[in-house]
Length: 140
Ligand SMILES: [Zn+2]
Image (cartoon, rainbow, N blue to C red; front, side, top):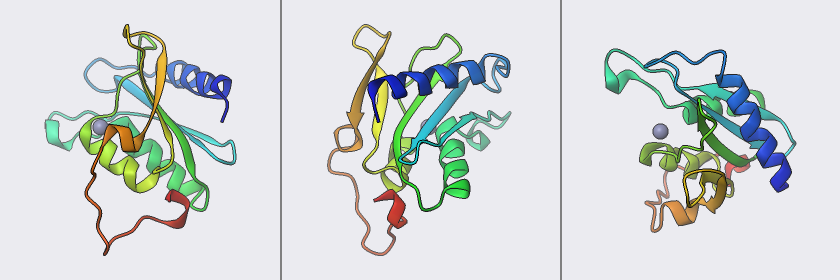
């Protein structure tokens, strides 16, 4: 995936969020890009009960797994309403390990704007590995 395609994916996530943004309810948008070129964008879903809320990344991953179960996620980034990249939380990093192991992850630039990329192994060094539960072939 080219840097230009990643930039376009991030811009599409920002454009997707803009008309859907609802303070405290839908505040960020994740985009996952597939090896095939398909792309899935999703909002977070907040809740009155904080632990019932869901980040945007699991929803976008679920959309990709539902629509393209044999494809591989090659890029994931999440933006806020200002178009700034939001790093994935720890839970989402763990989920990305299962469904997007080889993907590049968008992170904020050093000054907080722009985007830099990191492999998941850099975001979760020495991750727990289960030999009993393995992700689908597309995720590896
Ligand atoms: Zn998260």
